[in-house]
Image (cartoon, rainbow, N blue to C red):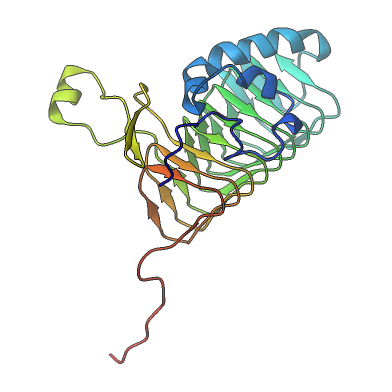
Length: 264
């Protein structure tokens, strides 16, 4: 673990070209990367206020209400659409497949695909050319450009950089184990993690992961709550990663990763 205390989004440990994400200016005024997540709803509402005038209000094959957006058919948008009652904005080129559900507030960038059975539970800021795939669930998270969560993924209270790939079944856990006292008392201790000789207090009760640009998660990887993965890092399939900061270009593998063959 490095001794650095600079866990800001734009410290250089996570993103190589943050300016390429059009909403980056909304994310700059935070000392620590995770501080943006409790403010994501208000950030999205500001973005939606600016976009309201630039979009049509309905689209065939999409059912929208205050509960959210339900995709009834195969849809490819040739212009931006803003469903005001649902607080959902979809940019031109977005591809939607039947049965996807999107709750607001949500902003989904150009040419992003939301596939069959995807569930976006609100507070979602998604960039351009992304994939939210079959049976993938996402809430209170930011995904930058060209990132993919294509199959059976969970993304909760997390931030993904650009060109991130989540292998099938990989998950970003956001809720740590709770004691009986926490459950019965209706409270959750904030997540903390160690970096070098320092204990970092996040002051947030739910925190998934921060994945830097070009991060690769193998199939069935689980990242524990409070995992910060530097840019260009890889995680070997079927690995559980403990919370903490992992520097750029980390290659995380289990101690025993070789398949062994033995006689019956």
